[in-house]
Structures are given as structure tokens and as C-alpha cells.
Length: 188
Image 1 (tube, rainbow, N blue to C red):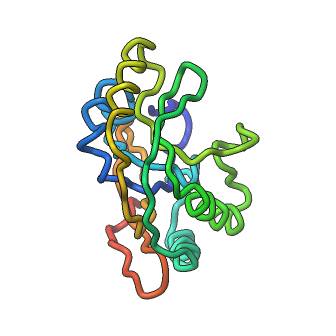
Image 2: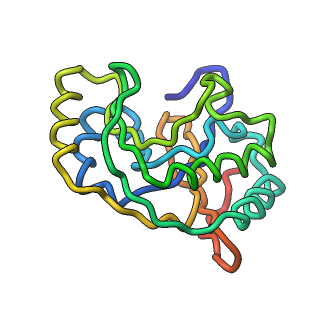
Image 3: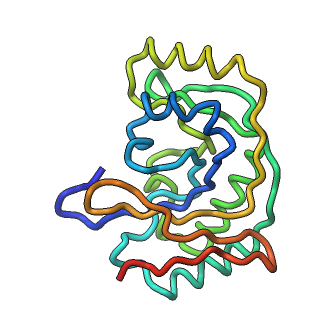
């Protein structure tokens, strides 16, 4: 969502296209961010620096940070809830996903996950967010009947909020040494 009177936001995420066949339609119906261009993902750090402060120095620092990580395989193994508001998928790669967040927070300590709002940050892939409870329970039954969904994570994406409120993937940072990042020019 665009916040009037404040800077546009950025986020660092692990995109997970492998879950699209299982949860894509559900997300489009029950997760408002799916309709704003946010792909299925696990958040590494949100909010990150405001878009108007994102520059080549920060991008270079991110490239360096993510070279310290390593690609990994993980599987989404079950559904869970945050209260009655958010239905999500859990990954058995919890340790690796938390490790990516830790790498960024060490380099950028002023940017805490979710603005420091939560005592513990749980890596998760949102399926439904603040949708009608009966629809979310139905989605849980449907997704829970599927086998685990496995993915290989090789990069972290930088998402940027646009004035329209939609989000786009600006750049991907490869994990590990010798992995090239897909590059797009940053918005000036």
C-alpha cells in the first residue's frame, strides 16, 4: 500500500515461484499483496531503506552481504497461523532463511525486521492475509492436502514499491561466490 506523505518502501525477499501452482490462485483471492505484484516469497527484511535513499553504495553492500550466503534447498512442509489473521506456509529451511536476515541486519543494524515490531521473526510464506476466516480455513484444508513443495533458493530479491502501490522486483542478488546477480538499473 502506498503511504501518502512518506517515502516509498523496499523489501528484501526470497522469491518462491515453485509454490505458485499450489497457492497462486489462493493468494490472488486472499492476500492483497499478491494483487499488487508481490510474488510468493519469504521476507528477509522489511522494511528496508526507503526507495529515495537506495543508491549504488547500498546495492554494493547488499551484493557483498549476499555473497556470504549459500544457495540451499528447502521444502514448505505445512500450514500455520498468526492468530486468525494470517495463514502461512512453513519452510524446513528456517535456519537458512533466518541466517539471510541476520546477514542483512548485521550490515544494516538500523533496519530491523518489521521495524522491530515482533520479538521473534518467523520466516514464512503468506497464503492469506486478513481475508474472511471461512475462506482461509478452506484454503488451509486445500493446501494442507498437498505434498511438501520444495524450492532451491539461489538469490534474494529487492522489491520496490511504486507510486501506484504496486511492487516490482528491481534486482536479484545471487547467494555465494561466483553467482551473478541479475541487474536492472535502479530508479533514480
